Image (cartoon, rainbow, N blue to C red; front, top):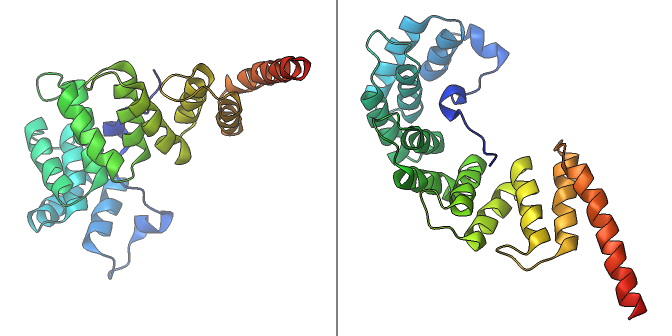
Length: 224
């Protein structure tokens, strides 16, 4: 079941090329990010620690990521969890996603899919496409949530509308089969077409198949 994963490997914030040579007036968190990007990890860690102690959500998140990547002298998954929970309490959506991953992967000692789903749901409700896809997948598979195809379709639709190609394909398949939504080949075609336009390799074949089925059904109706 496709879903974006390895969030814990990819979630340090993006920076521009200009951020690698910050002017003196740059914000402290930007300078810390630049230090990290240039490989000056002790400097970055010290800056993130200072900023995290002052309540900076982005610094708390990035410091947590350094713990999880073993980039500190004494990395701690539990400290990372505390930092992420603090950032999440401040509304930092990437922290919510990372907490979902921690519980899903068992990084805290055991896999807890129910708790993972709670964090993914928070991220989904805050507009995260990754969170929406994760929540839809949980309902689709019955992992961490009761199997509920209507809810799976709802969250796949949210993620598909947000541009996730995997969600677009999955939503198309639900419309094709009438699983969790009324069967609708034209809506299925629409979402397969969107997935194809966004690079899904299987979607073009499904488009051809659906076009043939739609034409066949049209001919049967005309002949009735």
